[in-house]
Length: 220
Image (cartoon, rainbow, N blue to C red; front, side, top):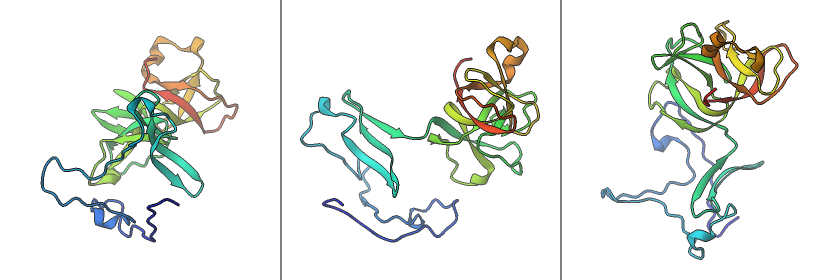
């Protein structure tokens, strides 16, 4: 499909906790054996374009599946580059307060001295388990099952019980089960402020638990 097209049938055959590049099942590895600290591995060059000519159609890297493109690194129409993906939140891996506790995407969690729990009583901060992070920081190289990916900023699908209108505040339900509730802006009280997780950008008439697209990390 291109002047240089490498095709192979490889698959990762070891557990997810591995950090060895030899075990990831890559089709292609570019290796620089230099021991110099200023060594590089891969350069991408548009030799026929000036910096000001870079547009969002100037594609440096494309990430694709059989169904189409899911992300890219491209020009930003202003002399730079941008990373584009369907992911909608910036997230970091945070350790569990209790490593045996189970979490799911969309769970509302409390932060206690940097560790997370679904027990939202006396929480220092309320956050949500990421559903589709665009960036995943603080990746633990070891004991990855002791951590969960938590949304810090952006849009995240959040578990909510009860009816929701767009613009409602999403608060922890107090049930310590990862769910939240929606409160209309004119019904929000000062005492509720500590329980605010984010603000609903979705609406639903369903009473049961469902996912609501919620803006998190902003000043509410």
